[in-house]
Image (cartoon, helix red, strand yellow):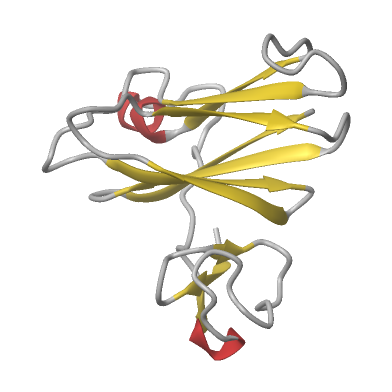
Length: 147
């Protein structure tokens, strides 16, 4: 999938134009470049391969938050239907989150001590949540879910 990628931090601008400054690292718009293979998506969603299962974010929306009871929806993202390794030589570097193609957060992950997962407590009660994970060996993978 084509996208505009920040050459400094790897952030992908899903809105189709480079932002004035990168919302992750602050780099200027000129730091973004168009890449035809910016994000990988499952080729046949009905029949994903084990490799694709290991890299595709799995999004679960939880309508009732256990931490913030009013006005909060949880978004849980686990990398892989088959759990992705988190070893020093092969790991998930970060997960970026977007609502309706607008960036909202990045969660950094460290190998050896963390599992390949993250959760956010969302205020919006509707929209399309996108998660993009970055594997240090196999690139960025995308998944989407309705809030």
